[in-house]
Length: 101
Image (cartoon, rainbow, N blue to C red; front, side, top):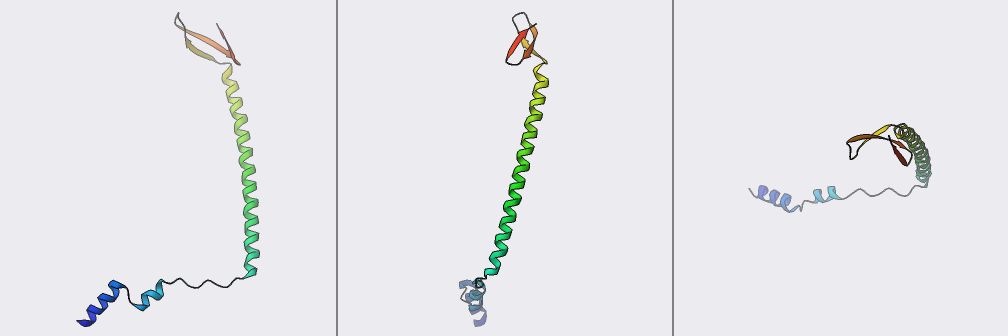
């Protein structure tokens, strides 16, 4: 009975020395300069990859902008319905000005 009480007390208050040892993080390894070379190389590769990705994104954005301009040009000459005093009439849009029919 005393063993059970002392065991419960140790687990409740966490005074068990084994549990304290398990909670401490392992010591960090000593500094190794040879690892720095690998880290620097990986960092350079990541920067190069980011630059290539950025260039591809800019190229795709430019392509999308050109396609959007072509799409918009196709709709610039199409009729747009408008409501006038007489009823529904059609306007043709040419650039910034519109000419009623």
